[in-house]
Image (cartoon, rainbow, N blue to C red):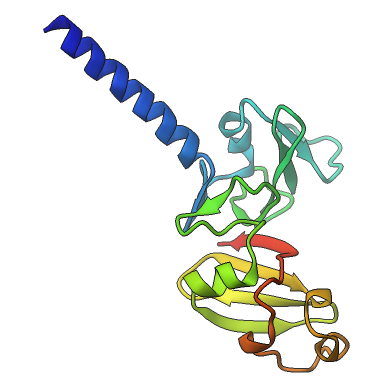
Length: 183
């Protein structure tokens, strides 16, 4: 009986650890790992206790984190860039996240290392915005938006920023330039 209880407790602890590790890199609406749309910049120190947080703006005379920051793992791998809705308020919530690390994935497996084919096979694209050097793809019912460099497109689509680009014109093997969330 004692062995059964011990094994059950051990198994549940191991399962909980595996789940927490996986969840720390899962992207969902309103959440990326432990960061949610309600997370403030000043809470990041307690969320990323094992990682390094680097402020990107020089804010003399401020205490604690304020403004845009980047998060690096212990081994120096850049994980995320987090931008608040108000650069001058340490209590401001995060409203934009740029993802650098491929371990961050959606439930459907989409990551910074995915291709356009992975995207279109798993998500409905609701809009395409063209800029001088990129196209931005917006997804239905998702906080995610993807940027693809125009260098990934056929030559005839690269140089006219006012040209309307359709999903059928983007090659399946096109890689993401930016993989971002906005709340």
